Length: 264
Ligand SMILES: NC(=O)c1ccc[n+]([C@@H]2O[C@H](COP(=O)([O-])OP(=O)(O)OC[C@H]3O[C@@H](n4cnc5c(N)ncnc54)[C@H](OP(=O)(O)O)[C@@H]3O)[C@@H](O)[C@H]2O)c1
Image (cartoon, rainbow, N blue to C red; front, side, top):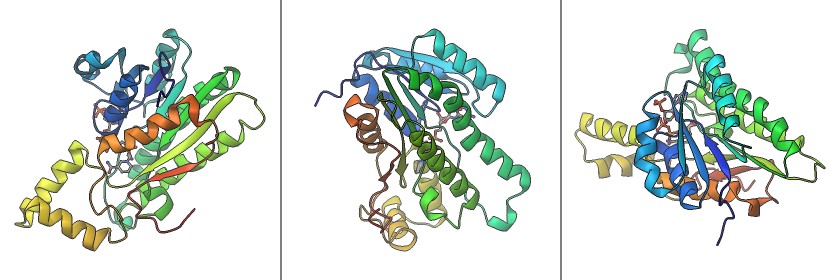
């Protein structure tokens, strides 16, 4: 299927590794012009990806309002932004009673305000164009309220609501403009892979044993019963980014291996 993304200008926040990088690779393969971002080392990653297509690097910390403004302005110099992917996010399991105000503020700054600032800048411009896509990479945690990471879950729920609220504002625009959230489940990024290795070693288990027990004990409702591959999330995002997905707007698209049992 031709996703009709040829030549579309895409910005992906936090795309030097993990899910963001996999999305960059998928969209480059579809012919999009992709702007990648991270706090550092972005030029090196752009080099690694350049054989796939037209890739541009913009360094900068999106939890910082000034950096964020600079990044938005730099994106604009490259042309009309067609697709904004709010992927960057941090997570850290911590007992609820031990999460300080400072840490709450940090999570809200990094995961929520980064999304707000990019949307505030580009949403009105996209509404004036013929075409626009905003995709928030939230998490199933935003629907479940994980007890191991209440602060993280709150920020992911907020991203989902921002997505729905902005989608509501596209009503009747007559444009091919949508705002959606994609909700990944446990995904085997480098960070998660490192955590698996260390946790397995710490418990004197093989990685295979540790993963099997993780899904048996922590995520027994997962239908997949394995970690999702970053490229499996990227494939979902590529379709939502496509002009072909115009009928999907304001949605929370679960890509969590079936671990949320509800049908909605
Ligand atoms: N992995 C999972 O199991 C999972 C599950 C559900 C949802 N998600 C969501 O998916 C998204 C991506 O997760 P991931 O696991 O792929 O993350 P990751 O591997 O930790 O990668 C995060 C990316 O964001 C960049 N970054 C971090 N802080 C930044 C900042 N302040 N400004 C700009 N860039 C920044 C990092 O580069 P630098 O460090 O160089 O800045 C990196 O490129 C997150 O929103 C996460 O909540 C992940």
